[in-house]
Image (cartoon, rainbow, N blue to C red; front, side, top):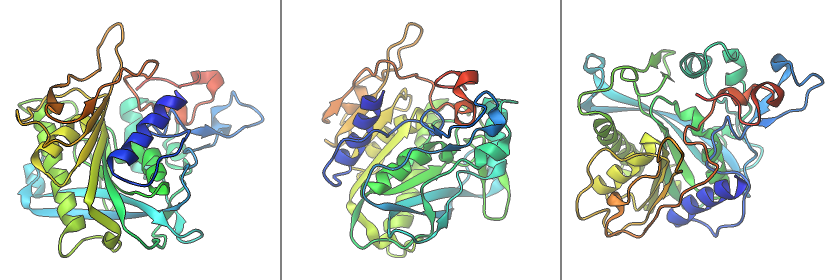
Length: 347
């Protein structure tokens, strides 16, 4: 499993045209499945277990800023009455050591709704929201230009579930934009204190998952506009090398990477972690850009996506054995191994 995680993370950096790749032991695993559990006197008592994300493997300290972006030119596709499309984006970046303050994993309301939707009654939400991260809020950025990697979580999942890989990528010399797609996850908290629940999780839109993938492509293009335009929304936007942008995601977020690349040529490389493709990709492919797909063949389901979207593009599609198609997992972040097993309960 460590080799799988290393390969995935190294490939993201490679596809983003970032710094030279070295071996690592953490990567695109969920925060839950890769959380470090602190030893406790009574391991069978879940209330005594503390948890933290994997320590980043790169040489840089990690900063994090939170952006609230509003697309005044686009109505929210899932809740039209909400008005303009609004997104919350976590920006991770190489930072100076010993600057900034602790960055929370997720808000208490986000943790409550995630557990309510995925593992009801398994853990107190306060303990999930208190998982330790390694990023520092508004830490001072280092000097230099860095590749940008956009991360998109799986359908129904909040962006916090990809905090671990976001931190690790930033520690290795990437700027990371980790986006929440509003009304598509169990909950997204906004600066005014509202936490908006999922509007389409139980009732997908007409047109199915492909429509969601296409909406995510529009979300990402808007985020790129806000980060690389003439008047960027982020104070450290000067760090971004706009010629080196990649996108990666889990499940539907991974499939949306291909749709985004087909629609927005600023995204020059992509990775799909265990996502099936639903939205059509043009016959011309992805403009010759590299695209990597990870999946697993199981007895009951083939999660390896078809090679169709990579036509006329350099590609690979490994079958990752021993990698559960349903990750991220949630309860294992806070449940002792003696109770939940080495990987915790499924979603």
